[in-house]
Length: 182
Image (cartoon, rainbow, N blue to C red; front, side):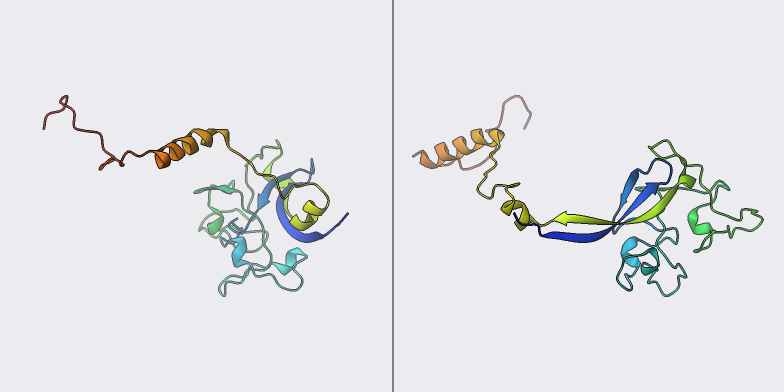
């Protein structure tokens, strides 16, 4: 039995209350500083939050903090201003004139039924089994061929067409119909 495992640091938006990993964080995920995870350079061994500071020269963000978003929609602060109207570092004070907001706080409630404030960007080390190890352990059969039953009629049609002595039609369009004016 082979046990080739690869240990990888994964990021997730995790609930502190129910311990659920609510949202997996990928390279295109947004940070509070308005840069993506891919823009946060991995420093050191890449094992702690401090190893993921923003690599943009004009940004003073020291670690990646996930901003809940979906497509063009992004979480806003309770002061009704966007995250881009707040500073790049905690507590993310609002920079709009005449706004008394001193800390970014979102009224967003996650699918786990807990508020935004109960979540953190979690850096989680996970072990993944290599594909070669899966074959060696018998978890996957390298000789297995997956067949799609929906493709069988297409294959039969192609084989019949290939064995037919009739010449192929000159055009893939049907002949003109008299139902339509010319």
